[in-house]
Amino acid sequence: MSNYNPDSPTNWHKVNMSQESDNVLEKGYWQGTQAESRAPLHTRALHKILDFARPMILTKASATKKPLSRTGYLDGLRGFAAFLVYWQHHNSWVRETSGADEIFENGFGYTGKHYFATIPFIRVFFTGGHFAVPVFFVISGYVLSAKPLSLMQSGESMKFLDNLSSALFRRWMRLWIPVAVTTFIYMTMAHYPGFYTDDYFHKATYREEIWEWYSNIKNFSFIFDTSGNPFFPYNGHIWTIPQEFKGSIAVYVALVSFSRFPRNSRLFAEMVLIWYFIWIVDGCFFAMFIAGMFLCDLDLLAVNNDLPRFIKRLEPYKQIIFYHLLVIGLYLSGVPARNMDMNNVWKTRGWYYLAYLKPQATFDYKWFYLFWAATFTTAAIPRIGWLRRFFEGRFCQYLGKISFGLYLVHGPVIFILADRIYSAVGFVRIRHLKNMPQWPNAFPLSMAGPLGLEFAFLAPHIILLPVTFWLAEITTRFIDEPSVKFAQNLYRRLASGPTPSGPSLKM
Image 1 (cartoon, rainbow, N blue to C red):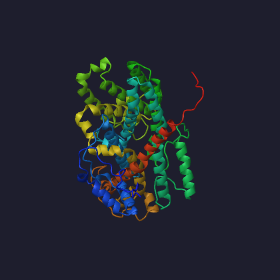
Image 2 (cartoon, one colour; image 1 turned 30 degrees about the vertical axis):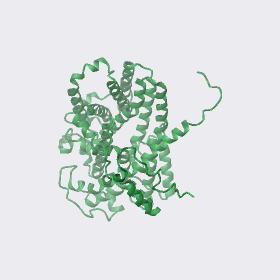
Image 3 (cartoon, rainbow, N blue to C red; image 1 turned 60 degrees about the horizontal axis):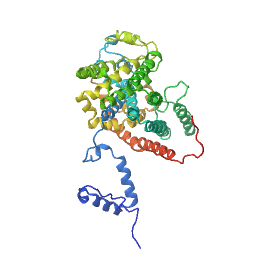
Image 4 (tube, one colour; image 1 turned 180 degrees about the vertical axis):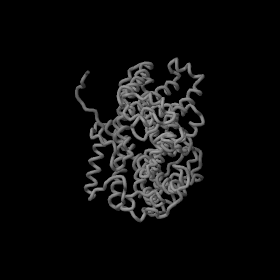
């Protein structure tokens, strides 16, 4: 009788012999599997859990570095943008009651106040969260349209439609499953252990809390929701997700609409659509997605050496053109954004004449300027070698890998952990004295340092930054990536089902 055990860690399904010339013993596969086979089942399960939960910084890097794709810099840019969101939200949180957040939001010299953190170009590192949102949207427009545009340009109509069918089916699940799971976990943690959080009003019972969460998530995730509430009570920072979904639909519709157009007609139609969203209606968010699609179209045409003639004529001047676009983009990224009052722009040094550019249709003026900032910057980065290398570097690529997780968890970390630490070091709110009296000024630190870089503000990030990154990794591994795989597998399963028999309808 055979002693073969298919569940043994040393069977051929577990030990996958390399087809290369590398020696299996040298790689340590055999010793590792022998040790694993001697360990009890619960020990092996614990090791698996610890492996999954281990921070990436403590994981041994692979000897063979995976080459980056042509658009790898976009992952790094998205990750760095997510970090700017993290930094601005922390800066704003500690200064909300003191009114100092108004200094950050307004420009350099506004009402006679001059701070290092508000200097043009430098201010993006303190209030870059506003700039990061359009960057997310431009990148999404680029990435979502990359494959369909390549199929469109190569004339593969059926593959183009198959790709769009899959992408459209999966998009809602890819965005909303991670949001639903993370907000449910946060809601539960805030209710059951009894954590006081300063971001929303808690319900009396857990049942009421679940119903409140359900009522909000079902409406918030509905693309045609008309409730008018832009902020989700269990994580206000995810107000961008409905815009992300709507912008994705705009890209898919534009791709289908322009799929039969020749090159010049398609590029012209994309520019007209951008113009419509900015100057005719209040649709700057949609314009950002279409701008990403437009940039992707140009890049793919450049790869195929099929750019329009007038663009090819600019080739000798591309370096100076893209450096100018970068400088203009970074300057515009610092638009004063305290509120929607245009007087903030008129009164800010260096913005008086720029204020005349705002279209009548744009309600919240900052998105008009940030549209150009994100579009110009995203277009310039791959053409400026040192900048592209920065975003292709390990740190930015790491941030890119966890960017969605970082975006989802940094808010709950602020509400539960950071709020207490900031209160303990000296950033005290009135509500802290009532709701968590043991924390205010528990171990006060020095407030020395320029605005935005005080020692008492920077020191807590020795704890907050690694905790947030680690939770973002956990969210990526256990929630985000499984959500992506679930949507992919579900589509494949449904798409590969039996084709219904019967006469087909001819249009």
